[in-house]
Image 1: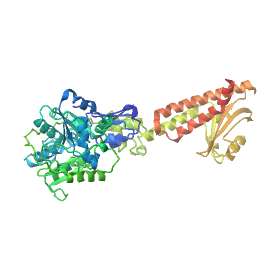
Image 2 (image 1 turned 60 degrees about the vertical axis):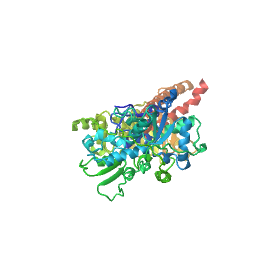
Image 3 (image 1 turned 60 degrees about the horizontal axis):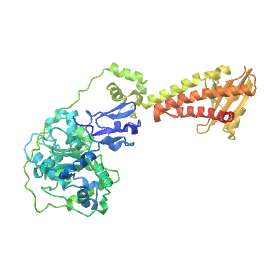
Image 4 (image 1 turned 90 degrees about the horizontal axis):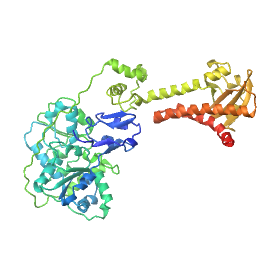
Length: 564
């Protein structure tokens, strides 16, 4: 319906899936390992913006749009959300009006005036609905996910729309810019039925950016006052849980069975998960946990308790002006739409095919670890079928795949490879090694000296050397041996080339070294390419394989440089 209010900066998105874990409505699609917001499913809560550690999720900036409203000498009025004392605490709250006037606003007002008007309309008139609709995210959620509850919504627009219309009743030619903590307000003013009430909506983050660009320092501004035109009452408490009920003078201590106030996505979703019989009740829901003072544009420099205290202190110190304008009636009635996306049903056979692809047909491998962002492997499989997820999001699956790929390289590399533990017992050998020395896995667990001259391994074991190279003979073959230590793992690796058919001279040894180096580089390229695809999901097996190859290459790098 509206534009993309929240979107992904793809260059910053790095396979972490944290946004999926924290999106209450699973409105994020993984494409090519990147998390893209599906706009028709998004409720604009901004939770992904708050949670993304890479700052890949962002709220659309309307700063240029707001600045353009000042062109041509138009009168521009600021409507500042009542949560501003939580963002600009103490003396800064009193200096904010002055700073906004420096930016060019002709009038600086409080959205709380609209909140007071909405409260009177919502709770003072005889509407059939029971659920207050001041929070646009709650409205979005019901319209998109619980349209069967639309009849429970009180058909009144939000405070931002009411205030915009009140301001334009005073200043018909003026432009109105809202400033607050909410991403959904940008979406709310763009609804067809709301257009024209407010001309632009900025977050507190955008306002701070604007002030910095104009070199307006709040600390250096003088204290000022808002232009008050209409009654506010207790509406400055609107941003905290129960604030609307408090504005209406309704007892909201949690002990009244017909009055509820709640906050947070989980509580809102639970509210609309049961019976829709809310008759006679008054329910005030806020989608952000702890209310608007926890909106997505708030910075993390203060705790929720500090924000709440700053807001309450400001509200207590504020007074109604002696003269108020007569408030003309403005239209705030609101209709709601059924925007639910019909969910496609999938068969057990389709789900099983997804499990087959990720090696999880056996319930033992359905770990439900949540690393992919979904609560269970089944939810992830359904998301794959809907095109919202990718099989590669399963980290246990990718680790198994990485191990298999490493094992495959070990099996096919033409050089013999053996791995021994700290006691020099053989723990792994590849087919080329077994063929070269006519042995099999039955020797695993036995000391390497049972099979080969262990002099090199013993030197590594003493810690005097990190790598060892020699040419030896055994079982009628001559072999080139390269050994090195994996100290962190307490293991030693041996790599062997059969040089029996070559006459041992400098030129032929160069050929051996070149071939071994080439194989090692191919081995490394395989591993690095795969590691890049797997990103940080690979376990120690890949890192180990990279180290093996790198150490092989390092043995010959100096000699190659000398030849060059």
